[in-house]
Amino acid sequence: MIYTFSTWLFFFYLYCFFGWVWETCYVSVRKGMWVNRGFIHGPFLPIYGSGAIAVLIFTLHFRTDAGLVFVVGMTSATLLEYCTGVAMEKMFHVRYWDYTGKPLNLNGHICALSSLAWGIFSVLLTLYMHNPIERFALSMNQNLLEVIVFLLTVYISIDMAESMREAFNLKELLVSLESSNEDFRHFQKGLEVAYAFYGSELKEKSEAGLKKINSAFGAGKEKSENMKAGIMEHVERARTKRIYRNISSLLSRNPQAVSKMHERAFSEFLEIMKQHGMGKK
Image (cartoon, rainbow, N blue to C red; front, side, top):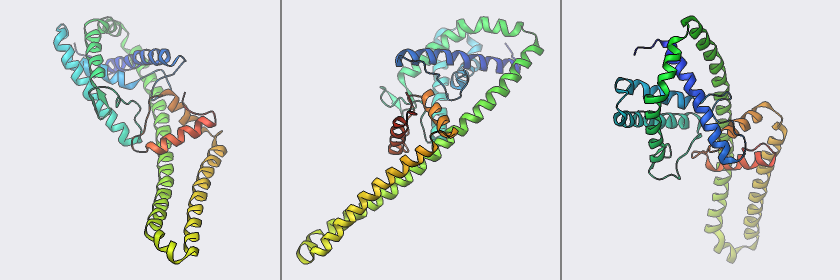
């Protein structure tokens, strides 16, 4: 079956929506509270739409062979999930899904259980789900279909642009916090080296020198406290600003998000946001 470009887009948006329904229900049940899942704000999960399109492209030619559909669909969707995960982490410095704790995972981006789920999904999609959806799409007036696709494209493009801006804002914030922590760690390491190098000598030669080093340690501790206070003050000033509300919303939609590149900064940021009632649930 040959589809028009508009028909493919219609399928993509529809499966994005179905993926959002599934993920939102699943995560909400697990969390015991409503969670609007997804990278973007609206009821669409592009990874599911992309996965469905990848599966359909590679399996429609042998759509009645369940075994082949399972293998090819699982392989294509898993490859897509891995590439998407790597690209998003490189771009935003955050993993919006992470399988690190799962058995047989590859760099936390994919795992055996997820791949198995993609294979089962491929069989259900190709052999059962897609047939009535295909008939519905092909029976629609082409002009109406194109209008629907156009409106959805505009809406999702705006939503995606806004969500990417939020993700880049989070990245910049993490880089800033990581830089502050790195400066302090270098300062602290220098004090440790100074103490290790001069400690015994100063004990013998100069109590004044020892007091100076102790004073330096006190200054280091004071700098650490001032740094934390500065971060808290910065968050306090900006807590009502849209950027922090949006970042909080992004993290709430992605409760499994982690940052391997800025792990300490990400953890500290979540803690600060939680103290101000803005952390992810």
